[in-house]
Image 1 (cartoon, helix red, strand yellow):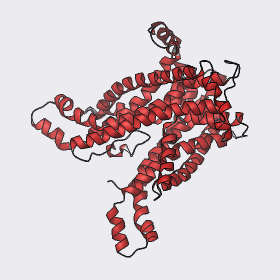
Image 2 (tube, rainbow over the protein chains, first blue to last red):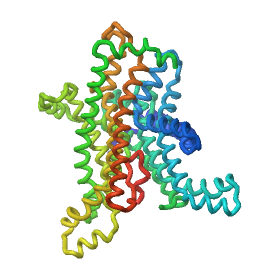
Image 3 (tube, rainbow over the protein chains, first blue to last red):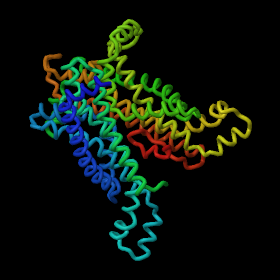
Image 4 (tube, chains in turn blue, yellow):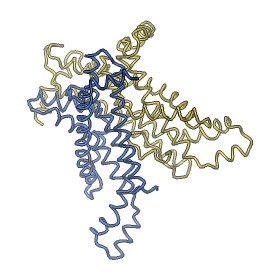
Length: 220
Length: 266
């Protein structure tokens, strides 16, 4: 045990910077995923049929393609094609677009979970369409969406590790652990601390979701 | 866009063995996914039963095990196992691989990859199964016990048949995720579809026509979309069929990424 801690002490900077890179990847990708997911969900509930189709094609494509393939296309593929894309942009873009497809599905099912009767009741009470959306539909939709969005966030933390091992080689937590392990030949120790880092992140996310759930979520 | 659809850039697909080479690689991915799925289902069921067991120690150990492996990145597990499994295990695998297995399976790293995939997916499936079992009304178990069935008998004849049927759609969506995750084994130098894609793009391979990276991986991506989309349609049909059979609206149990949360289980 003391060995483990002195090992962490010796290489703390590497692990900390890797941890920080992972956090940044997750936070920015989450932003991209939410924006993309909202737009695609809006397409899927739009009253125009070809817009719905377009949304469906987006979801089915990005949900069924491996993240690693997206990373190859967005980085190596575009670079070879002459687009000078930055590793961060490629990584965050890929993870964001990939998760966005899932977010879109979650948001869509959230909107549909609000009963039709509620909307009719609110309209017949004389609330305008906008007020109905704002005061009746969205607050309830948000509540059903809290838990699934939480599990997507956890999935995203885990998926972010793929960015570091792909061609992009952003120095995230897993990448740093590999560098430390190849320098010191201490595989077990370096991977142990990387595992602790990831479990801290997923654990913190789980706790946060639980708090949000307790405050907002409703069981259906 | 013109770059992507320029037929000249797609010529590689019809040159030499390129298309066949990649398709064979894709088959290896599917095989890895299937093998891992079979073992993950078995281990997952054991883990779920252990977590639901009445023995608090067993239940706690299984619970911690599941939570740890479910919350670590899969690629982390695969990489670690590839580096840390004793070389003698790898050798044992290489010597004992049946001769009919595809060439890619001869690498000792496949063993590490399979263990990683099974560790991760069995933990996820255990959670899905547990949710399926817990979603049954309590009366089912009480009735079974009241009829004089033992714990074991009630599990085997009453609880599991119903609980496991509920998790079929979730298992199919986990299979889709697993399918995508098999690309990760390319990181530890197994020549499945991703590696083969890279080999095709490296310019001096079948040197006559250049294969642009973008196009090769778009092609590979399309392969995955076709297979996984078919699977997801299948899963949806199963779900609907089941609802018709049981007559009732079931509580849904979804796969990890699709998860409209296994929260009922908490």
